Image 1 (tube, rainbow, N blue to C red):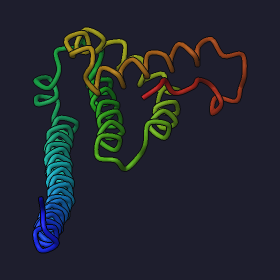
Image 2: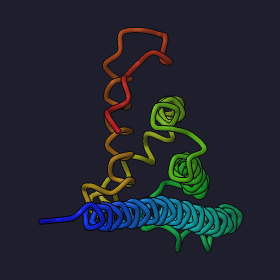
Image 3: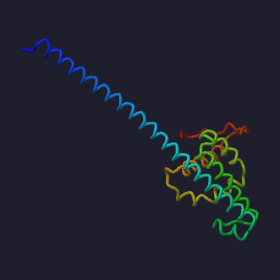
Image 4: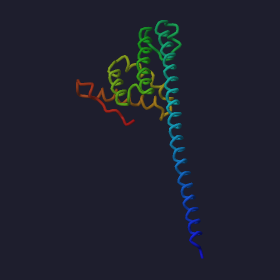
Length: 180
């Protein structure tokens, strides 16, 4: 038979055990919150580093394109697409610069998917850009199907088709951005 004093001791032990368990759970919850905060911070730093690397790569890309646009001898090295004249090669290089700039703006978050669609729709109105795009189709064929650049390339293909099929002068309403 448990005495009154034994009941009090048991009750005190249970209370102490419950208090310890509650404290442990509170500490674990706080640790979990801190872990989640750190995980989010690391993800943000990684995203920021990726944006910085993409931006630096774009800077180098633009430098190389600029050099190629200024010097026909360098331009001949930049692409193996056959062109009719040095002027057409410079135009294709500039079309490439426009496209890669729009792609980078999307990749680093300056524009969202819908805004990218709008920018590309305007670029796709230009017949020189369309010629460039068609001439470089074989290059895009080597992209991984699920890559960002392949998805954006498919968006451009659809935009060009939609613009060709549109029976309106209001080009700014043609086409819907595909699901991101």
